[in-house]
Image (cartoon, rainbow, N blue to C red):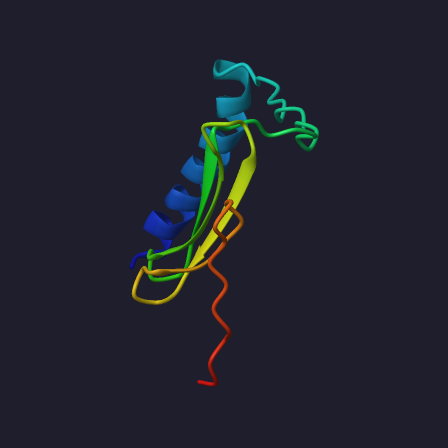
Length: 94
């Protein structure tokens, strides 16, 4: 490149940067205020899924109003439930 072109390019960049702050008025940017951690989460039921997206457990409410916890094996079959006729299967070695 010619030295004159390089010099003119540098001068044009400096002038453009200097003039820009007067042409475009600076605006303040404010970050959103942090939301406090939720103290209570309300839902009719919760589903626990494993990293593959398969159902691993549920926390729900039975028709009589009692809380019900159900855990499932890798095949989706219940291995534990806290309902009246509880299913409790022992864990097997992997």
